Length: 277
Image (tube, rainbow, N blue to C red; front, side, top):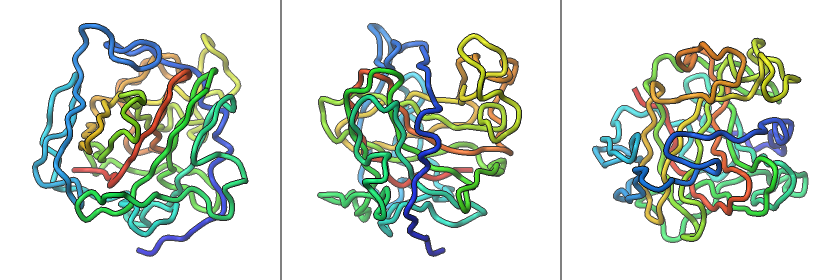
């Protein structure tokens, strides 16, 4: 379906996703630690990211890229809206802690163009556009990009993804010297304030804290590679609204984000993101 270009980004989320998480096998900036396994291998070029290519898996293993993919956004129309399909409507946005520099920026200086994909030179197979963000100098909690799954007219509503098993996308570094991992966050009714469960005003160590999103740390390399993330492998740090929650609430998802910690220089291309069955 046709997309709509909009002159706004989700700036309201810019300063609300604070805090950094320590994950097994990575330090507090999401770098692989000595002795931890990880893979940054590249996959073959493809128009859709399907068809049996090897993708990054947990602990550096490999998975077959799913063939039954419902595309969220292939970026080919060059605007900041995801595909309006399967009940989804949303727009790409940047967010950060305000202490460094990021492209695309979060401020109104990008309007009315907004957050738009970048032309790939050379193309990735038949894919000619991808989301590209880079930045440095953040000293508090970092920066990232993302999009809502059901966010019409500046609203934020849950999206039922129970028909799917996980997400898949293609990624590569823009600069070989940039950090080689990205934290992929998926928010649900438990972690997102719009879900009505968590307390947005709660601080670190307090009960019912928001923004403890379900996450997965994906490796990045200089070659395009598919990243396959099953919902079942997403975890939380346990400082959020409901520490006893055992799994992502797939019937009530809000946003997918790509997050970098403070003190990291980041540069990432993201392409062909979709849900898979």
